[in-house]
Length: 104
Image (cartoon, rainbow, N blue to C red):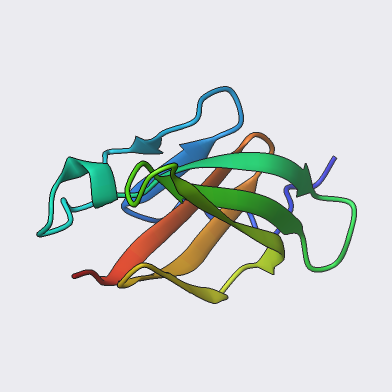
């Protein structure tokens, strides 16, 4: 089976389908760890062209916590949430990689 062209394995940060965390953790929000997002993967679809991933990010504060879902993100998409902007750089089976373009 040919490798999916969206699976570049590039990007400084990763979300893995087996864990709800960013590896390594995102740069800390200036207002504290409770406002620093964590994230996870709902689905990866490598059978579409281009490949897509549905991912989520959440924060503990403000209480009771908030989350944002991004459905069908593609390679090269830029996503913004809570002062952070990321660019999707790789979509592989079980892993989405990205770079942080901006953070608070």
